[in-house]
Length: 363
Picture (cartoon, rainbow, N blue to C red):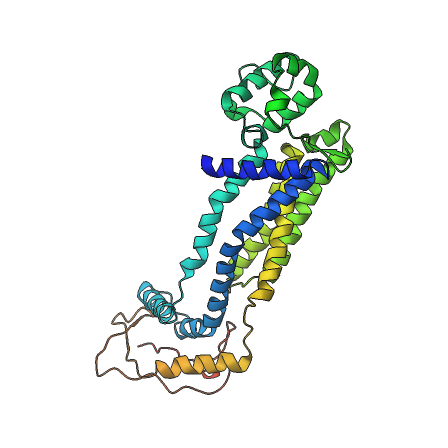
């Protein structure tokens, strides 16, 4: 992970030096977030293509699930899952292929977090011993830090602020500090905001800092809602939908809480990420649109599935007390009933005669 941290630290340093006199750290942070989004873009393309294929398979998968509707015993569920997996194999589709890009992106996103959180280590390029020396020195002239704090507990963003506020005294002890290292200036938007300050300071005479957690919440809340509109959504149960609605509020609130407690630079970074993620998904939805199937196309796909599986034998479970289907290849097993050419499969309640997908009968 240290290699990832150092690589992105070098990138952030380059962005800061490029925009130091044109927007400063706030613009550099935006440029940094944009470059990283472009680096991760190929993985997002793969996810979108995987969603395309999943959407095309949905009518056939719905037909399989409809066939076993109302039967919840283990044997029946296993048989249903086997048929779904067989469908995936025939269509060269793997649900896990959509997870791989996320797994690859995860350590990168964690690395970005630490680069933003620890600018002295990854942007200035200081080693741990020098950061600790600076922290211990500042504890003698500032109440912000405590003597002998462990390196993992050091708030490097706040440490840079205290160094800049006490620069003459610091340079007497570390004369080559500003010549050997880049010390980011966290003033943003014409000195309107100090991104090194914690927004909790809004209650201590810096009311403008309240903007950071506010935009963090709004960008996270509306960003995820808008992103979902351009993302393929598999059908969820009512319980899953209720949980999703709760998470739509809880996660942005949690982000806003952290934005209150941590330096404003972190909240601004999360805001940039939310906005850029939505823009990316919007572009992907135009480049690789998710197919919207007509009722006719859905019916044809389900008829094709039913016709393909019409001659497959089956028999009911020997257990009279359970709603189960156990399939085998016995010759004396009756064939599936004839397909009724009426309505398409839906997830709403319907009678046996309403569906074009015959349900496997019970014994």
